[in-house]
Image (cartoon, rainbow, N blue to C red; front, side, top):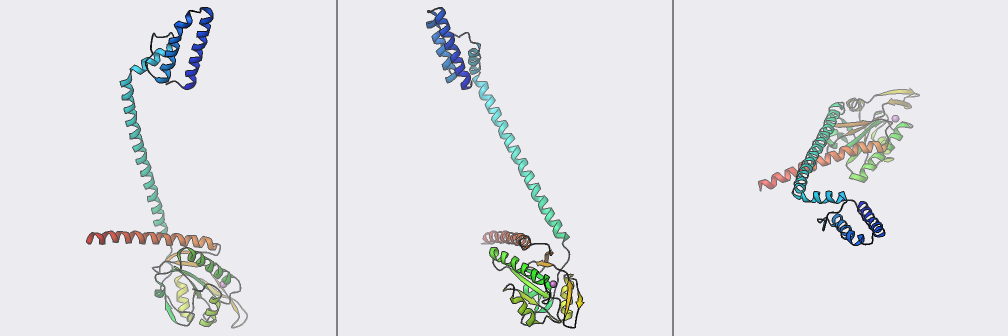
Length: 298
Ligand code: NI
């Protein structure tokens, strides 16, 4: 079909010509009129031109095209099939790409997992009330472990505040799934009452742990925590140089990740959040699979 603009241009042209003919020969007007009307109806309704073929070549082309109706239908079918095949092909290709991307992502995760250092392990310490605890007592909870000492003037309090903030962020979204743990590397001065009082300042769920020098050494060695006595003024007045790291431990008691001093509470919470969601999704999928199996058994 001709565009509307062309159609009206043609009509104008015919009207113009008619006017010109009327001026030259008044009788010619009656002769030209049906052709002009026929031309307009042909291009707008698509019907075959009525009456005699006008001298305008474009009208003849139009009529010829319309006569090849069967060819038109065939062409439409062919293009429809072609379009369908192309669409299916494109969709299949898109699916392949998507799957490949997912596989790549999984491979990266796997690689990261394999790359995690072997940190953590069993420990035996005492809690804020002097009661013995082991790593087994914390199974089923996510842990955020920090090693420090209560007499630390600035770094440890800052890091403990950060830890509290991380736990608060996670609490808000997941509830109390993560437990903050403070492990003293200064067992000589950090007896349970001292640790208890110190922890009181931070998160209410914080587990403050200490123990004998041997127990503390064993726990810190498992996490490769470095600590060394620094400036010593007297037997009870000294500072300890130590590594400033938060350890993220999974519900199975296995080390997941560690966060250095430069990380913000939000960044730590985001990393932990990703693992928590991943675990939750995996657990949900497992439960659904089990649900289907037990439904089959019934
Ligand atoms: Ni410190």
